[in-house]
Image (cartoon, rainbow, N blue to C red; front, side, top):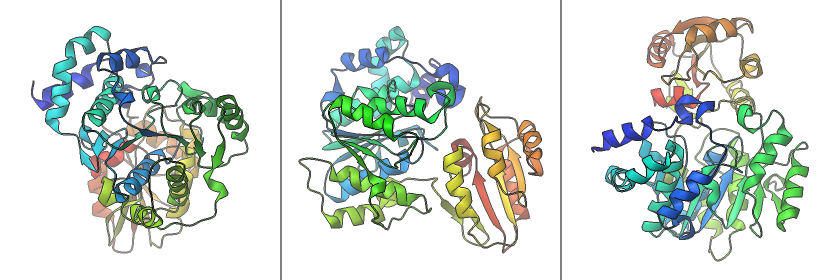
Amino acid sequence: MTYQETLDWMFAQLPMYQKQGKTAFKKDLTNTIALAKHLGNPERKFKSIHVGGTNGKGSTSHMIASILQEAGYKVGLYTSPHLKNFTERIRINGEEISKDSVKDFIVKNKPFLEGQGLSFFEMTVCMAFNEFANKNVDIAVVEVGLGGRLDSTNIITPEVSVITNIGLDHTQFLGETLIEIAGEKAGIIKNSVPVVIGERQKETTLVFERKAEECGVELVFASDSHEVYSTDLLGDYQLHNSRTAVRAVKELKDYVISKESIEKGLLNVVRNTNLKGRWQILQGLPKIICDTAHNKEGLSYVLAQLSKENYKRLHILLGVVSDKKLENVLPMFPKEAVYYFCRPNIPRGLSEEKLKEKAKKYGLRGESYSSVNDGYKSLKINLKENDLAYVGGSTFVVAEII
């Protein structure tokens, strides 16, 4: 098998959430546990930090990894989904897993993977853990994929568990209320493992307090700190994430992390980890910004920051997935903007015509385009020198233009 054939085979396995949505969600850790056992339980051979939450868990994971790298440690980083290349999901000190390692893992374990009927996500998580164990990382930062309690990453026993915040996203899997969702996310809290909660929220604090008491651990809320840290990640919302990242590394035992490592780590996240798609400025004049925010809470931060920008006219390239509750997010978008409605190139991408029709009900007007690239080309043609453009609505829209 070539590398591309390997990826094609992986993507063709039991439906992948990234492409299919709800039908790919498996409420069971049996397969992950079985594959981990088959591999000799690599998750027990390295130390880790587990990062969950609704928004900011990706940025926070990258910040933690960057700080630890600046402190001189060999750091694994597992995140999802990828933007451009599958190998982005598994990194060590910012370097992506090699294509040969991906291919070799699948070829070597293919009979077991097929026989067990493993999903794309299950095999990818175990591939990451196998890589981290084989490369003898000092510590790995592991981002939860979806939820927490039943997420494939939840076979690790970390040094610290982190939950950034709770918002209404993926409600079809995790519950319709913040309390229900918090219950699922709290599933990564384990006995005697320190817990950092990024943001103290009235609706969810009691859920976390009860779970922490049950596990005999003390809760730390990063938002109780009023320290301000500078970071190279743009976007006002990164203030919350930086506080959470700093609090998490301070909870680590047996690791020496200086104030200088924290400061340098936060200022060099992009260089150290190659993070993309968070308030990323694609060009200067006229200015084009993209961001992967895709739910109510995430978009509220991004749109508030967008309103602070100076511009003559605002252009927005917008695409979403079909299971998005548009009535929760479309009312937040500015009515005075010119819209370019598009469909992300994945099976669960919402058609541009349906998005345009729904957006019209909320006073958002513009043209529809059958692809992200067509919409982006049109936006760039129409953009004048003092205008501003924003690209977003979905991770998959951003992935197609960066």
